[in-house]
Image (cartoon, rainbow, N blue to C red):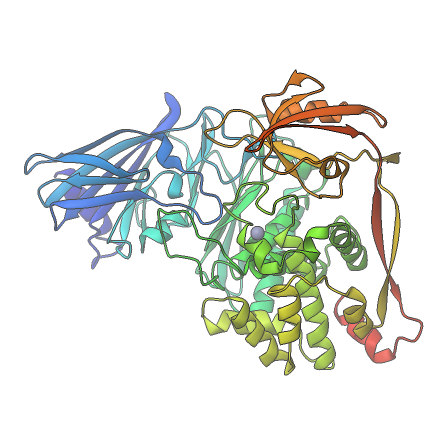
Length: 596
Ligand SMILES: [Zn+2]
């Protein structure tokens, strides 16, 4: 039996009607964990075809850079290939059975995010003797023109490794299928020595998987899993149904961050953090899980099914990210789990304080901030920086209060989310606006013009007054850990393919902005000493004291520039939410329903 016949035979018992014509084998050799090999067996109908590495819309890690040893083989004649784009390989071979092989050589040090955390990003592949993360766009090329074809995946992994993935199972525990190339990319594979728990919600199986480091701290796994189940319960209760047949949480020790998929999620959850608090990763878990609906299913119009080109800007991320933040907080509270910043009021005070402290929100609309939230270089907003998560969460909060008020508490943002989920159409600002209007029976066009398409800062008091609340804003010296905070509102990054550091000014009224520095200036030296990396620059900034004088030399297209900055403290506004003395009973009821 040749390998192709074997493949078809293995699938036969579970799926007698299916004969996948794209078969992947991903092999991890325990004696060489520097990467893995991929073999693609294809049955082609043309003598020319193209294979591409997909670009993830949010985290385009460009793993085409790590493809080595690409080769192609055909038993029917000569087979050749050429790279026709950075992420695309063109193969010429007689039609019929063709085998493509390549290896992904993992980068030795993953590119550090701007915040330079020592840990690995939970969505990035890795291999260790006790397990690793493989698959998805970091591993598999897809056949252009056959994106809708079902594919088979065989995993050849070190002995004893368990497999956790959202790929469809077959009767063979190492064989999987995906109904399309996009589904293949949406199903990362966590394998190794895993801890696994299962529960059912609304009749749907859910699996919680944890990959521990060798020296993992022990934690209360019962509380850990029951917290996740409570979030799942609340989320399904909100939407009334789930968009998946089964769901897998892929938690990893020694990692940070997370990435949502259509029926799974990769999450960093250090065991030391979970030992301190078994719900330490729960807010992030709730956020990513909510994305299964709001982003993966309620999709922005700009999202493609699968593509190897970088995702073009997305204008509604304020909704996809911001409302996901809104619900991550709310669903935890509905589940009876107190998030770290204690009350919903305190949570909103913190968000509003950040909002009023940042001039970007009076300068860039929610849609403008959305468009640079993914795949844009730092400094994309010039000398401002803004969070689509924060801006969107506050917009969502004000819309929720508007709906509750106009419907006398009968409806809320929950109804908007359900409507958008059931509509099954891609969203943009107008679709969201229509959904809000049909739920509240009110006119929110002025709101969307002002805050979504326009950059008018939100007047929080106007909306809080609807539930009998108001804000009090006080401004005082910024304080950190009880000490006057230094104005270090400057940072740097190292652009790919360029030597040195570029500056990012996050507020033009900071000491650094007032001294004439701008985002994208190329850093030359600090107090006469050359600075080549962002960690080096950060260390020098951190060592500054109040009153120090700093000379910063930069290079820009117009020529060299030197700025002198005296390190000083700065003022920061703080927002408090208070009850209006004349709040009515009806307003108090609305506030209670919104968990204020
Ligand atoms: Zn998110």
